[in-house]
Length: 576
Picture 1 (cartoon, one colour):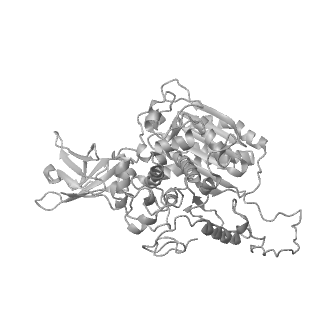
Picture 2: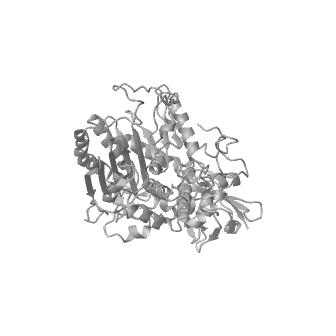
Picture 3: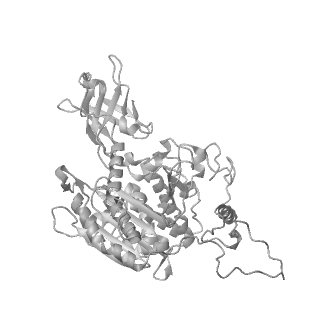
């Protein structure tokens, strides 16, 4: 683990303030670090390290060979070191057994939940062995989901994005994972200038920049574009640099956009040129407009009263395209999984550099600390959740979730050459995660050994509950004070992050709050005295939140705090 200097970053190898950064002095540092890690692991080899990083089985470096001296050969019954990964343990029949249960598994979940449509692809040892659609694209219409139905991927866009960047890193000497973002986007900045100079593409893909969880997402909900959001990330407070994990769509987006700038293009064009076109992923795009115009696409659905699902939202995620804006089919995603499991090769040709791709699969952040002494921690790589299963095998996974109506998941066991992707057109409640987890469980044990549905569904319920206010604003206190006259609250209030907030009375005398560039209008409901509430909308909607004015006797309100916009202390608007 890195030793941190004043919470800024690794003490070893990090330039002091004002010091010049070596542009490509990486090989020596990488070899030295690899040697240290190998010693700590008791002699295990890191895949891809050359002979200079190898150790003996005891962890010591091999003795230098004297010219002309006799050499000893290892025993033919012993390997020189433990394998980097356990050898494949799943027989073809075990995987086929699991595939044979997919129809029943998916069908049972659809009946249980009402999710309208699901598509699944399974890859094993370089071949697509299952590819199928279930259900309908849109409730109330007969069109069926098939292998070519386009789904919104949501955050399943992230491992696609890291694949794209790995493709650039492997072929372009101008771009490396550890490049500071400002090298390619000089306008990028965070609140701390020291961090701004040093935060790398890798830091942002690993969610360890110090930005708060989901920083910038609420600006997207209000209608701000990508340029505005990335420019205003500098307003957000920072946690300790490279010492904390916080999932940030817009941070990852900033890094990906910087890579595209380095190549003189847009992210949408770069992802197509580097990954989608070479793999023949003709139905995959990082543009919302391409999803919208697709004839065979899955609509977004949310559950309504009595479990009836409704297609009532669209989700334009272009502002965070690298992190959540891609769309694809299970046929195309099968090709991508084949590339991943072949370490960057497709059709016998090198598409993505193996070393650059494998860097995405290393643990870069501790994302899920172990809950018990014998428990396993979970990690985040570069666009991947990185875990190690009961057999010691590397497991890569990621979920995608649009609360407005899409849920997706992928899971790979690289040492087995096995991968599964599940795309759905329903709000995230745990369906795709149940399918991927149950499939791998059945492949390993011949049956489900865990109640994956309950585990996944309860996790999503907990996430939903955590987003809601602690106050039920639909139930004002019995002794609630009446609000003051509308003129006390009317006016425009300024905020450097969220922009202006305007309060005005409608023709019926009820107050309305306006936010965002268009703007978006929200009715204010009286709650108690100077506190009102409003119904949140958009991807991060979570019911009603408080809107509290500061007033003085006989004067207009001087400021207003919007509860859900104030989670990182940025939700205060001051009268201009």
